[in-house]
Length: 401
View 1 (cartoon, rainbow, N blue to C red):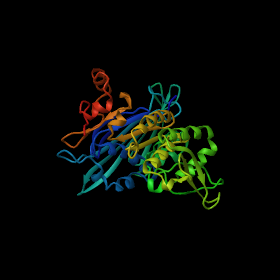
View 2 (cartoon, rainbow, N blue to C red; view 1 turned 45 degrees about the vertical axis):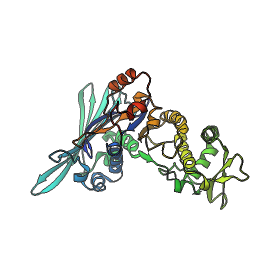
View 3 (cartoon, rainbow, N blue to C red; view 1 turned 60 degrees about the vertical axis):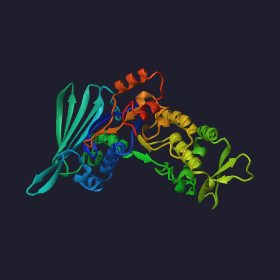
């Protein structure tokens, strides 16, 4: 049973006044700047921040409720609402998904604003049984249900403005801790991957005695990650190297050097046709370094549950996109992708069910998706084989530049 996020609903979060986005294994967000793609991704950052630090610090990191809430319209909204469905926990399914909802409400009392939160979790526990947790004020109520009948109700004390995402995972399974922990772990693992070429081109610390380190969001530990990967997954390493050679015709092989000894730092070196000496990655082109960083991400055997890549095509030759899209689909069996792009060339290479068109109305509200799946499929059928990127770029799908 595939474990993934099924749907995200958002109200009054930045430009997201009212959006409901179905999510598949691969989701490519297309649209010009300012339509809300980054705001959609920030919803996941916001939830991850809540797990790490709780609601109030997560809001303060965005300038407070006023700056985080929707700014359009004639009146400021009184609440922010986030709801998601997934199949992350053990007994969930598309017909009985995990559900989580958070609502943060602002009220004016005695001349000052006060914030409150309501949360709810719903999980499938075993055949015929479910669990619902509702949080309001300083209490969390746990209800075990069977065949739509309430079986048991318990109350748990909480701090007034603490989130269940940050608090309940520490509780026992009887109090819902196990299922909430799974949900919190998946959301906390969300990352936005963006290769920092200046950092990735240089050496990184490595020792065979160190714990296995994940690839960093900026790929600054690229050399150490690739070395470890080549040692522990030799067959997958051969495929990664073959992919790099397909896109970089002069590349003969990828190797490693240890300028300060095997217990110190490692660098990546490239053996290229026609050159007498290997090329340190520090001297490689911008596109070559980005390509290796992206391949490292896509071959990562232990990725997070949600991975975002912004402007994946930046600095790459268009011929690299065909291969990258194939590898992204393969990797989407291990991690769910949200990819934000302006590139018609990338959109040309994806399927209708993977495309999410983003627009923004005159009222400042984002429309995501701006075209339903049914509408998109009908447009594609009438287009007589025109690629998606051309349809989007021409404005037929909306969300044009």
